[in-house]
Length: 102
Ligand SMILES: [Zn+2]
Ligand SMILES: [Zn+2]
Ligand SMILES: [Zn+2]
Image 1 (spheres, helix red, strand yellow):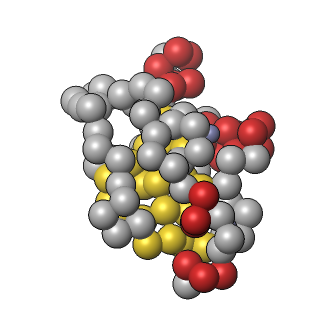
Image 2: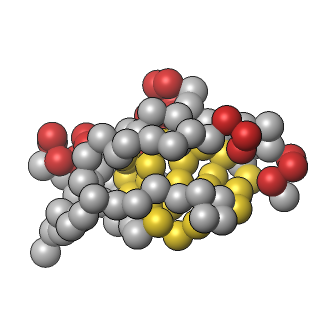
């Protein structure tokens, strides 16, 4: 499936911008799952979260590939091609602990 996506080759090693969703932490929001931008390291939240910051980040920047990031699960998603990518060992370690909401 990865060969349908030209962006997989552009995935970078990034430094996560925050321990949790960067924008939710600023706004006092909450999230369900975290998504890490593999172009710039922006940490956002998934589409099951109220604010969907990862998708918003893609719309703002065009950065195509995110990684499932809670914890790193070894898969990525390309917003442009709408395909899952197998990242294998090419995942980003978490600094942790992830801020959690009760
Ligand atoms: Zn792609
Ligand atoms: Zn968020
Ligand atoms: Zn980005």
